Length: 381
Picture 1 (cartoon, one colour):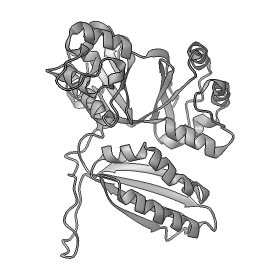
Picture 2 (tube, helix red, strand yellow):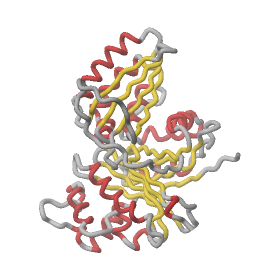
Picture 3 (tube, helix red, strand yellow):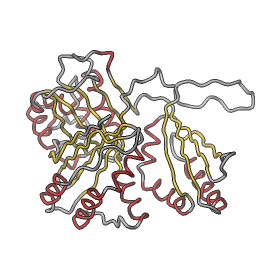
Picture 4 (cartoon, rainbow, N blue to C red):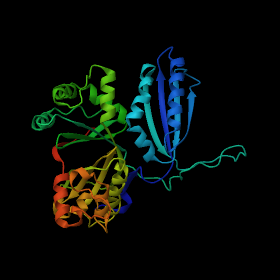
């Protein structure tokens, strides 16, 4: 039986300061160009809400290796910047002088140092309250749209492809891939043990995956050329759907636990608030051994929110729970955050359709994503 000591919780919503580390390997002779690009990028980032500071460092052992660190008041403003078209345009010049990059994000748990009179006042943002317990798994998702009318063909293609080799290297392997569709939108969620970037590169090189991606090309709303590194980079950057919250009871999932996906579209500018709302319920749910929620992962980018829910029993048994809004007035708050164009968003004091059990059940049916495939993998030791 699951015990509370096994509980897993990873979240961008704890309010702690964020340290972002970007490792770069420059092309030979590209230092001057890189420094010019960095200066322009630094000026742009300094005006982004939530940004505190950044540093540029060069390796004392290998001059082609550089390090950029930046500090943010918390994770949400950084993630909002990361997912913006402005960010995509800002970093584009880097690709001409950088051979390889690796990005790492850390919340600040402790800090120490002497007080210097000439230094500025303490920065905004608090320290992480306590170490979090993880499970060694990195969660990420990609989302993109296909041409209306092609959904069934695309679903058949994505359900029928051969799974890539699970092992990436001695320390990295693919654990699970879950594919869902909502209308003409595809969401592909992956779970990786080890290095996410290494896993993504490994998957992209597999013949089975290359063949699938080529077969999908004619049906995509946003065209791409996977043989052109710049085109592929832009497509997959825009498709990235970061995980902003994960919680699970930490025990072994039984045969009665099924994975579902819920799709929400927030009003412009309210995506992070909606993600925070639906994540909050599940934090308490996994601590209750009588609750059917085994775990959930919330992905968010701009006004799109996707929530993977691992649940025991029928999804529609408790619609408010399935939607992440079980509790006093949470459904009303969800209504105020939803895009009004879907017919469920509310304005002002209007309660909207989510005020009734029937309305919640109807919205759950509309929000439930169509499962395409859910594949687990194992690696022999």
